[in-house]
Image 1 (tube, rainbow, N blue to C red):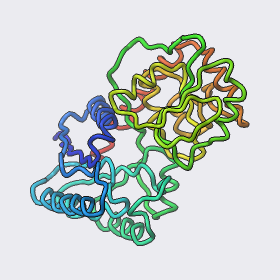
Image 2 (cartoon, rainbow, N blue to C red; image 1 turned 90 degrees about the vertical axis):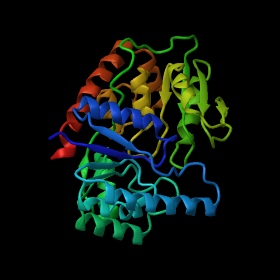
Image 3 (spheres, helix red, strand yellow; image 1 turned 135 degrees about the horizontal axis):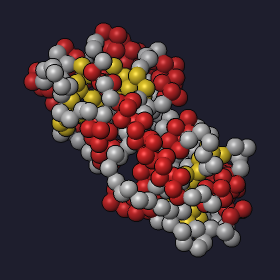
Image 4 (tube, helix red, strand yellow; image 1 turned 45 degrees about the horizontal axis):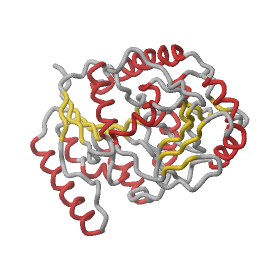
Amino acid sequence: MSVRIVLINPLDDTLRHFETELMESLAAAGYHDVEWDRGPQAEGRNNTWSKLAVAARTVAHRLRLAWTTTNKTVLVVWPIFGYFDILTTALLTRRNRVFTIVHDPTPLRESYGYSPWARRAFAATVRRTRTEIIYHTETARAAGVKATGVNGLVLPHPIRQDGPESIGTNRTTPPIVRVVGQNKRTRSLSALTRIANDLRDEAVLDIHGRGWPDMDGWNVSDRFIPEDRFDQIVREAACIVIPYDEFYQSGVAVRCLEAGVPVVGPRHEHIAELYGHDWPGLVDDDDWSGAIRRVLALDPAHTEARRSAVRVLVRTAWAGALDR
């Protein structure tokens, strides 16, 4: 009997691209009976009362799901209540298998649902129900085990399986080097200062995303990037810099590989899995400028071949994972 999957996504706008990546990866892995549960959406709620109202509707909706859903595999793609989220799907486990993707075992910014009480409730619920946890990297799993004691399955971040067969980076002169995404406390401003000091005469340096301060040598666009503009901003660049000091996985790096655009970032498990452990854009000894120069000299066919290989790795890893 084929596995019937229900996907729960409470962040329809924010995770729209992840939704596409996941659907295509599941289909490529052999999971074709997939449906989305369009429950209450938690985005755009700016005051306490509206957040509480959405929370109440979400809990009620998931209780109804527990009575109407049978013999399916339920996949929660984002735990909107943090570690408490698992309590809202506990009844679903009576007649279904439930998987929850934990993206950030320890949130990189202050978030609801990660207190000691939440972590204990999470661990107790996993032990007593048919709930399984998915992490996207070993780094994330190790952090999850440390935070909650809960182990889990490591499946690679999904990647779009469809897309242009021929890709290439923007070869404008001077090349465009960009940072894309919202500023957080884990971003390395010192790396960006070093890049500006070394490359301001060799490249156009841009930053696109909310919350970034003015940076000498960089053109900063401090605004939200709409989904229909994100890929264009990536594709216009010769390379994308990922100046993170700490992260579990990088959705930006995944989208860069999908677009065939090279990245420069710290020597991190996720970037190495995407682009290869010998990727010239991996930064050692804070040599950000050297890594940028190396990827700018790279043959675009190298990135194209890597994208094809990762697609195979992702669908192989997910194949059969949800019905073991």
